[in-house]
Length: 157
Image (cartoon, rainbow, N blue to C red):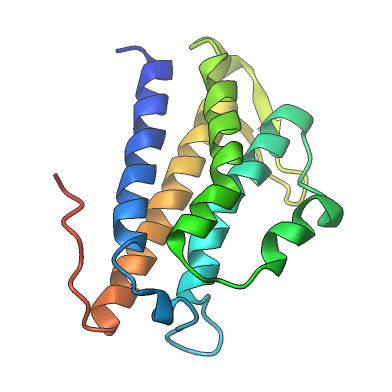
């Protein structure tokens, strides 16, 4: 397995485990949050799923999505996971398709600069941060489930 195949597997597995965790929440708890400053369950799910658009814009266009590009994505109420998946799958697919076009040599030779922070990293480091981001929010949702006394899915298969 080369580095590109490993990145693609990591993205697939992080997403699969995130979705297993998100699916454990009943719809009536999508607006629950542990405190006033925390993201709700629905906001966390949408944040992870729609963040694929942000990563794609940073990688391909060296910018974040504009307010106009993303406002409609955040305007809908949180109703269920299926709706969130339907609204975001095109961005995930486009992100995976883009990453699939990369060469392993790109991971050490292409540099990515965050448009909103003074961060400059190799493409490989940047892609790993995307997986880490998704994994962190999976852990966040697992903790929410624990706080709500809801059985947590077995994501360590």
